[in-house]
Structure formats: C-alpha cells, structure tokens
Image (cartoon, rainbow, N blue to C red; front, side):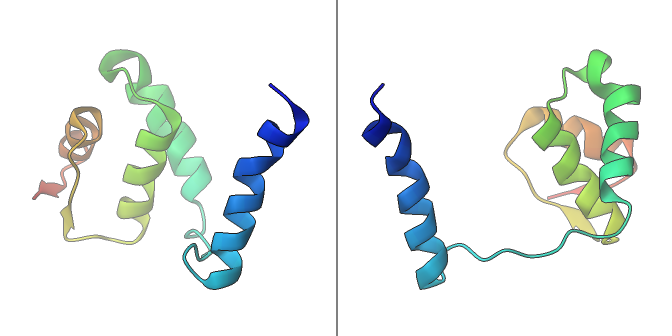
Length: 86
C-alpha cells in the first residue's frame, strides 16, 4: 500500500468531520470499565468483540429502554443483561 493509499481514508474522515457528517460525542462515564467487564464475563462464551461490548455497555450506562441491533452477538449480550430487544 502506498503512503497516498494510507492517507486517503484519514483525509476522507477529516473532511466528513469538517462538514458535520461525523460528529464526536462523549461516551457515558464508566462505559469503558463496563465494556471491559462485559468482555471478561461474556467474551469467551458469546464470541463478543470489543465494539459489540462497547455498544451494549453504552446502552446500559444510558439506561436505554430498548436495545436495537441487527447483530446476533450484541443481541445475545443485551438479552443476557436483561435488556429488551427491538
């Protein structure tokens, strides 16, 4: 891969951020600790990946009433945490 090939996605992301297509937001306090705990407890059993556990941890910390996903692993983890699925 050339240097130009490596820089292309970063430049595209920077442009998207500048135009407001991508917006940065803060995650809830304690979400990374919750994510790590979910990964320790459920990672091996459910085949969780980091972004799966992070998504569920954010929903838990935000006290979401329902969890929306098309991802089976996320759905299993959310259900294991007592969340209602949509």
